[in-house]
Length: 241
Ligand SMILES: O=C1O[C@H](COP(=O)(O)O)[C@@H](O)[C@H](O)[C@H]1O
Image (tube, rainbow, N blue to C red; front, side, top):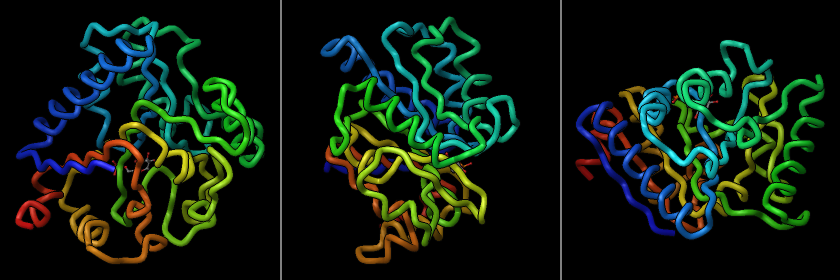
């Protein structure tokens, strides 16, 4: 793993820097494999990044969009991560619908939806059960409790290591989420963390030792690059060392 931490003075600079990194990973993947696979994060932090990407001239036919987690709500629900990314980016440009791979949330059975999406991802990448595909890039946020994707502290999802997708548990509410081994198989994982409310979780995640079950972002140790892009409000202490 190659870990890079950058603290940007403002949230706007963080947006600019993340866009730069996404575009350079996209260009490299399209050049070498004719395809760029990216999993998006939900929450408030990445929205301006998606809005900025919507203004770029991108090779849309070669970009495949997935999500690292999803709230268990219909796709047009205000809490839906898919809805946020569609309104901020995907619906603003001419994205081929067949390149958009949302997490299903419609069966009424979160376990079944997780299994179906697991199979969809395997079919897309052509991998057998027991194998983990490598996304070119996975974007992640981090909550004030150090959760990432929908991997919440002290929940069963943290122990799942034989599947790509599982059911997360946010205060008793189901979510659909990538598993830790799927995230860790990525070529590049980029955390986007902004705001002073994230400081204490960041201190726990960056501490030399600690309990990853209590601070799940500690589990994220990809085989490729790990970027932490922080704004100054979140990263003040980290910057001081
Ligand atoms: O619930 C979620 O929260 C995290 C963090 O969101 P943020 O608003 O603090 O940036 C997000 O990464 C995740 O995708 C989302 O479902």
